[in-house]
Length: 337
Image (cartoon, rainbow, N blue to C red; front, side, top):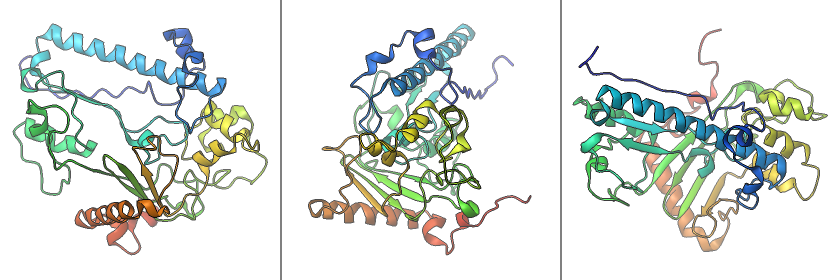
């Protein structure tokens, strides 16, 4: 109804798997060869992976075009300057090593752009650490409502309405991320892969609570034989064919099927190998987080500082992973049959 407040949620699936192979170049003019030498070092720089990445970038373009249509509609209604607009991803790129279902930057760092007419000074880049759970109290405050006390997110309104750019709120100098499970039937007993992480300007610290488990699920998926590998087409199109916490993709297929080649084996390990109980990455020297320095004496102080800060925060927020024994996450099913 005209003149009435509204909330509209637009949830496109463009960047969700599956993508039409070759669509990045065919529909959006993104030449995969233009990506040569530009992929993160944990991705093999080969034609199959470059094409897959180009297809992803094409899907990003498709989303951008759809967003433009929505903004034009708001403008035609005369509501563009009166509407709080939040644009965000929900996780990293699916179907790529260290993307979705990982706590590395490639898995958790997502776009976040917010516009609210004259109420938010425009054209700023803010570098404060925020979490998507901060959006709920932000939206409630924007609507002049009080967030419930059980919410652990912090409103972004003071940051958004500030005239400053860069680091606006000095207290927002870290962010906590976590993971338990993506899908259930990929490990015997339907157990999760519990992780928590703390990210600061200089370090990423990850705690893997059950390092004996496979981070992306068991090799052939729950209930499948151990060998041989499924064929490329199945790995590219069926998530449960192997390592079910990584979405099916041409990249996943290539990394698995070339894992016996010594040159390419490190990329398989980046994606699927078991991980130690603690990981620490020096983001100044290693921005792509491929060299774990948790056992390096030169980083011992940073390791202890980040470990302690993470655990203190988990206890303060009553995270069941550290406050319950056993944690409720270990006790499936969550619903009755």
